[in-house]
Image (cartoon, rainbow, N blue to C red; front, top):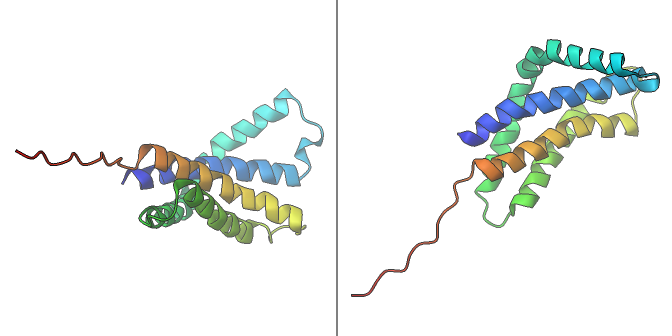
Length: 144
């Protein structure tokens, strides 16, 4: 249960911020930036945070389910699991966002793919660190 809470709480937050960064970069907003422009970015992020959770919680929970399934495969190490979840999130975000807008190409595909990859890897790492129950080694039976 902790795993899904981590994915639901952190995934849309990071993904929404990265999506905002990618769209502002694609629009040419960062060509002339100063402190006031950065402040506007965070104001827009704060105002759009509710929509980040509205539209991002279901995909984040789906990636949490993938992480949960892969956790039960003993041959997959946590690092490989994080990369697999990130790869699936990369493809999902890239296919969802990269083909929209006036431009499309490899740069847009990679940038929008990172919108899924980075939160997927971070939340998978946090789930590994805080949600997995560490099993203590069984004590040997004493022979009396």
